[in-house]
Image (cartoon, rainbow, N blue to C red; front, side, top):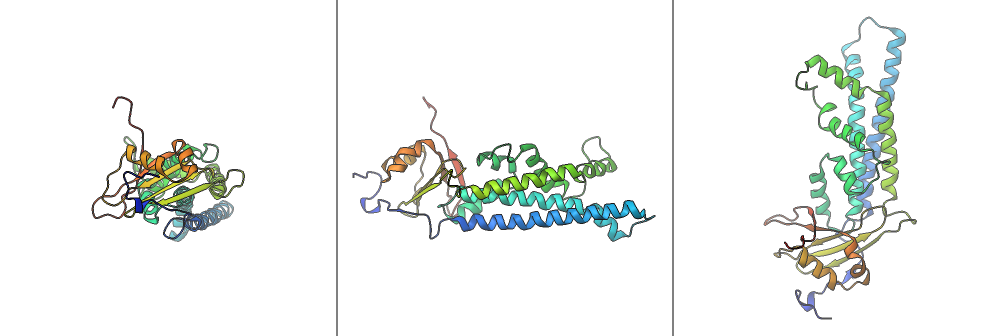
Length: 286
């Protein structure tokens, strides 16, 4: 086989993900972290409900400072922890999407998504029925502001009105139940990713010269994806990536790469990894 852009001796040899690449253990760690946070959130909320019921029965004339802090702080803590649990589950899904890629890529992409739960759920193509976007937006707002910092008045709102608004949002028992149901659905869905015989996953990795690699993963309740890290010192665009894919010594890659999203791992001078970005075909006539 004639290889043009690469040295003949550097033709990549196919190998299954492993070694320094991401594997299922990376996603498992994120899932376990989320499960711990979810359990803590549920426990704190249950304790808060018991405290509220006791206050209604006993009707004390005054609460001690610690009791008041628990009464007002526990629901915020519960929602905050539940938001972090949902974030852990989403990022476990991201880890499964990046199976076979370098571990540093997950570290960078996790930071790039931050608390943007809606964007990450959409990129992972998680159905609205599993993760309603309005609840994800609510949790993002809780984690970045409402449950994390002192109440901030909106324009035209007094500080007392801001506190009352936040209390109404975060003390809502039905909303918390919906969040709990969201967390369970999402946790179950992410566990199925790459692990469901009804939707088998396939991952192939090829090493490229000078630290580059090409990974294609398909199926597994995730979008089909090709991730390419060019050889060190080379700047690749869409044409260079598709050329490498067409020459890849894998029938599966050659047959299915055009059905995949293509993501390029960018690197700047002096940096090991600068995250991945989705690459689109050039517009006709461009």
